[in-house]
Amino acid sequence: MAPLKDDNSKRKAVDDPTTPSANKRVKSSHSDSPEPKKIPALPAHPVPFPEKPAVIEERNGEIEFRVVNNDNLRESLIILTGLKCIFQKQLPKMPKDYIARLVYDRTHLSMAIVKKPLEVVGGITYRPFKGRQFAEIVFCAISSDQQVKGYGAHLMSHLKDYVKATSDVMHFLTYADNYAIGYFKKQGFTKEITLEKPRWMGYIKDYEGGTIMQCTMLPKIRYLEMGRMLLKQKEAVHAKIRAFSKSHKVHPPPKQWKNGPCKIDPMQIEAIRASGWSADMDELARQPRHGPNYSQLLHLLNDMQNHASAWPFLHPVSREDVADYYEVIKEPMDLSTMETKLEADNYATPEDFIKDAKLVFDNCRKYNNETTPYAKSANKLEKFMWQQIKGIPEWSHLEP
Image (cartoon, rainbow, N blue to C red; front, top):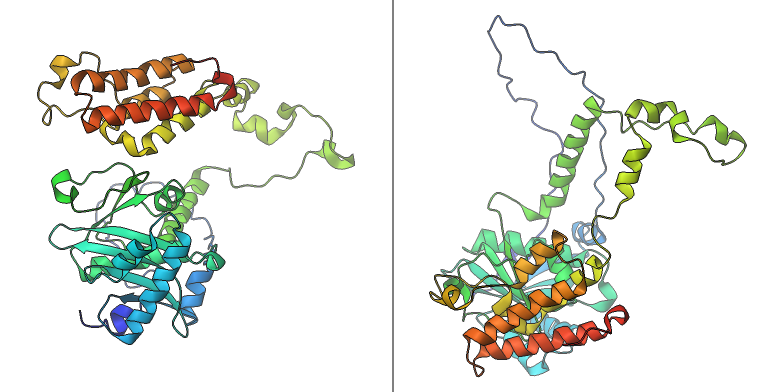
């Protein structure tokens, strides 16, 4: 592959104009009907856009984003070697020779954050699948001494804009470990895979203990400017609210506090009375949204969903894939249905949750032979579930 030149290999964010064109025409109405009542315009509240150090450093020329692959050029190999070393250090569970093989693989591309002179501080290695409109993110890491600068988010925004501009890729797939799921969620990835299985199944490597995640990009969005765009939209919504509400108004403290804090009746404050607030509303707002076991059950369910053996049980069995399944299994259950029931507070006790979980495993063993990967996965996941339950002191009395 030929080396990528200035416009592709060194990518810089373009400042977004902050004021609309003054030449926009306003459509006039020639109707004789009375004009609708106008809402008085409120003064603009410009909100400064908080830029991360990564954006500032790129603008100042301290860092640049380079797209490289193994084209045998000296500079490319230096950058790839820097990336390989970072991946090997930040991903200690991955075999070092495996990381090196994929980073130097000519079917893979890498986007690196480079400081002068050719000091690599982070990057992403990915493999695009031509004609299938998706790419697999194989490795993603930032050097440990360069984190909390916004490099990771800025890198992903660069990558999204780059692949959209240079290929037919509109989706990313990746396997994330438990430590990386939070990062990928912030970058628009989800555990809900909407890509058709024939398009990606068998093309990407299945990592044990990882959770497959997907990100679908929007054609009209420039991701490097997404933060600024969302801030403008947020301010526009707030401006609309300010036209009808006084929630933005700051009131002086109660006179009773002049000589120090003291206990007062909220209804003595005129602004609170005018808002329509009542003590009953406060009591209602303080009531817990979920039952006492919700948090622990949610944590347990998330751990089960992220387990390497959970893949057959994440969603209901498809009638199209397994025609006679619902003739054999009269009481189907899966982890996504359990999640829905948990959010609806259908599990009053841990025993109710365990009953449905055992139904998932028993159904699997009833329909599938014990030597199949499905039955083996059921056994592994059930064993894992009980290990997690035993680690919760309040549930130590529960038995398999």
